[in-house]
Length: 222
Image (cartoon, rainbow, N blue to C red; front, top):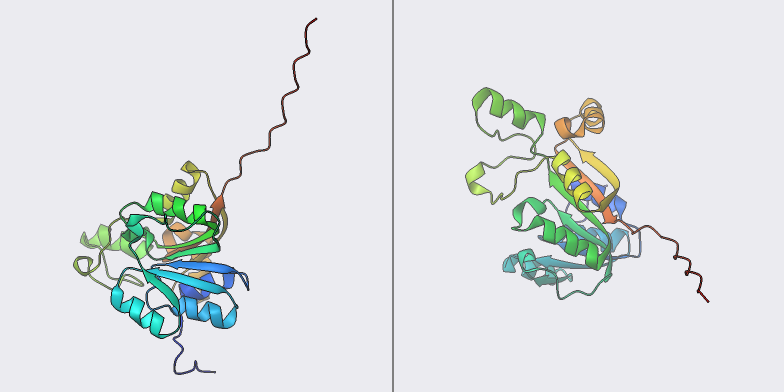
């Protein structure tokens, strides 16, 4: 069945993200764009969705669609939101664009029970091959724009993100990988994601401090 005229077909990574979100939860979408994910979640999962978007024209479009979106810059922080305000905080293909990605992820996990982060994989094999053979970053797969028209600030691989999580006490609860092509491409992406996946999607949460037994009081001396 084709989508209704006022419905936009989601990107494959957004479909994967939507499948990770439990129905009836509270969701904040950071860098929500035109609100495609929010609208889909409200329609199909019954969530209470809110969004933050930096471009005012996109905020206007979202509000016109009945979505709860405000304008904001993620580099300014998320101090307007209290701890544990949301069940999920989503950051889709935006982490590499912010000035302080570490702070943004920590803020996500402060205001959300879980974070869902999707990132482009600059370790993708076609990028490696293009650098090796031509000495230039290729426009392949999801990287269709030339470097000088995209505001990419941080180059990272999937292994880099996993390393960041390990170093900062962040637990990776689930991970999914997106690759264009047929079953073989999908199988390779699952087996060797840092080489064959174009995108990585991670469900992350704060590591809980281990429960330590209370020390026994020292016996009193007479």
